[in-house]
Image (cartoon, rainbow, N blue to C red; front, top):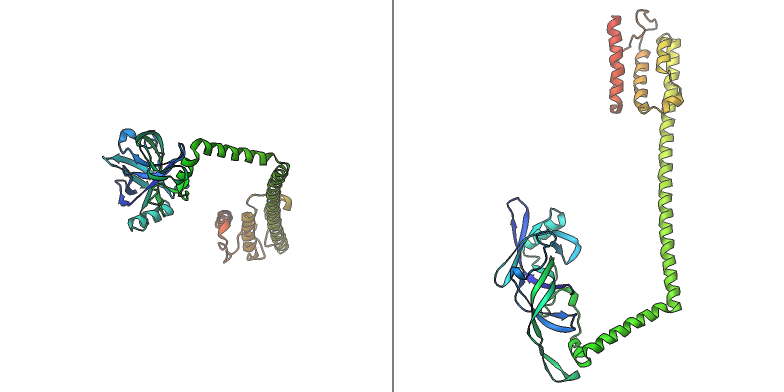
Length: 362
């Protein structure tokens, strides 16, 4: 059986005990709705049996009946939390999602801007209440009243808020829009079997077209173009990876260059301090014990450079004559000691070490 839709209007906004926003609405009634029964190729007036025992499946208890926007399965706005039945209609409560789109729908429904409610369902069993009544014969026939049926076993798949409800004279959803007015007359005049045979011939003709060399050639070209597109996409992704790799390499090269320049500058300054007897040689050896190559692979090379810079800055302010009592006599603390917030841990450790040495010297 095909999916069918029918529309109802009106929703009541509320908030449940958990503070979740809800919408309560009527989604089904026993009012006849006219639609096309594609299984039997005839127009019917359909009545839904609005009793709990008529509903099949366990989708509600499983939390699988979604509250959608315009029957779009990708536009979920909530979930149906409960359904109750009275003698002639079904009432549902939708628990709204916390998404922005669900909030927008909730406010529009609360303000009366969105009023349409539509249910998507599938009928498993009908009870025929009356047959169709026709006047005339063949092409001159006219439908007086369609076949009237009652859905005594049916299953709910989803419930939607809709912006534009289906044609009220048709009474179902989007799936049956645009039916020719004389479709039922054509079916009755030609006969259901002949219509089905015509459709089968159309299917055969489509199959013949698919076997045509020209079609096969086009189909092959299309498949080749799709394969090339996939290849180009893969190549493009590979190029993106190469670009990212190069960018990473360039960034590392720039960082290494900055560290190398700073390292060389500090080493040169320290050598000058040694010659001026403002820094003992063993302190110089300790600061620059590692080669530049080893220094570049140090994870925290930037922080260590900052610590060395602080030591060199302090040494520059020492007196020219070093007291032999201590080999670690600090100079005056530089004004910008804590200007670089990124390496305070290592810098502070170096400063504390030299402060201790100064205390011992005094």
